[in-house]
Length: 375
Image (cartoon, rainbow, N blue to C red):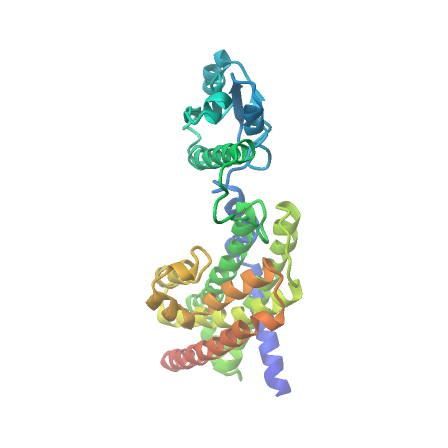
């Protein structure tokens, strides 16, 4: 047993040295767990953030002042009160994305039940903010006018009063979701790529034949690649969680980082075995890349990281239970977002372990068959 462990350790060190001599793979690792995460979290956000808005208050009433005070960070910048003549020039120069025009006698007409119209001018060249902000502004105005009328008139109260409370992400910050999901997705992607590329690289360079004449078994060769590449991805993921997510993006991580490391390690056992299995099917890196696309896209799109699983067809939900990424995403979200502990995510840990054992056994059988054919 000691000899076997020594073989696995030394072969793993060899894999790490081979990775260090591959500059393209090193660049891929650094980019995947740094710039890629930051870009995914900050580029083209779905939520509104610091949108510039100006208000033309021609009514100067308590209702118009109430509407103006309803726009505040982080969704909007503090509103600028401007004259009507300044509106078009401000939109042309890009000073404002939204200009809200409150007409004269707006409060009087509202109390009289005349339903006066407000004018909202939008700079639609800023498409993402324009589309999202339009809905936000309509909701804000409707809420403020409705609340004002309820206090001014003895109108019957609504049968249901809906009180909204946002948990875990009060301001609906897209970066909080995007950055953590990008780490989870990149752990899956890079672990498959590194292990598969390591095996194909040895086959292309002819070093796999050297291993076959040494007193090592296919199990030892496979375990060495799994622990070496898995360790690289795990260290990179934890570094990204600490320096990019918490440091650069200021995203709060509510759960235990050590428990997330355990969860990621179990998941890496599954995905690295999957990478070796795909590498035994491919004869070259281009073929491996094509197989990777066919496997990786369903794993990432249907696992719940991009779209909630509850919104998918039941058949897809049932089929994706056989994928380790489904359980990894569910446990990762519960742990990192909601601060769940081992008492909550233990079913996902067991599921990932069972799936990993099946994938490892399948990959080992295929790896042994491939080595036998080469011998």
